[in-house]
Length: 254
Image 1 (tube, rainbow, N blue to C red):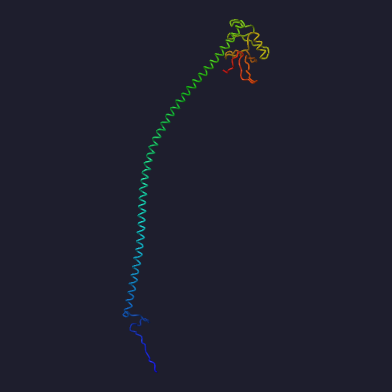
Image 2 (image 1 turned 180 degrees about the vertical axis):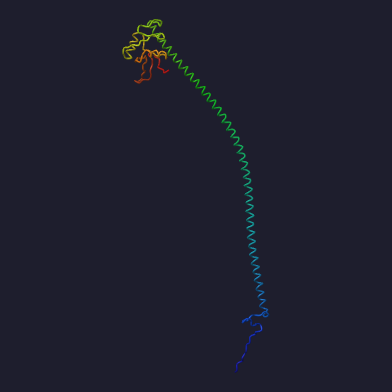
């Protein structure tokens, strides 16, 4: 059985040769343009939705950040108000402290003035007390010297009465008179005990220095030679505790 032969021919109505190639010429296939427009519309809708979504996110984020900034601003305002109040309280405390310090300085200055006056009075009182103490010491020393002088004169008078001598009588030969007493400057050498015995045998005693005048008289007549004084040591337990004159009066440095 013979086969049927079909001839296929290309519709070249919609194409034209231009520049050595085929180019689609508008005017055919309107459905394709509708699909393209639909696709573009969908893309536009999707872009719009995405843009709206992004814009919503940005607006939400900006709103959150704005709320945070407003909250932070309110916190800063609250802190500023608290700091202002604290600064005001601190200023009041500083003014109170300054006032208190001024009062304290005034009191301190007054106390210093009173202390200076008290010190000046104390110095005056100490000076007056020292002067009084010096006068009392001088008076006591003078009284002690007078007492010892009186005791020495009394001892001499008693010795003269005991020996039957009178202070108005002339001194024996080689004896020197001075203030109613007689003094012998012996040239013989002897111990203290021997000298005291010799004086007692002559109705006298070793010299007792009563005052500076008598000391000057003795110094002028000793002429640098050594002589015994009527002074003896007071011992206790073989230790010297002090010195006293032969009339029993303790030695005092006047």
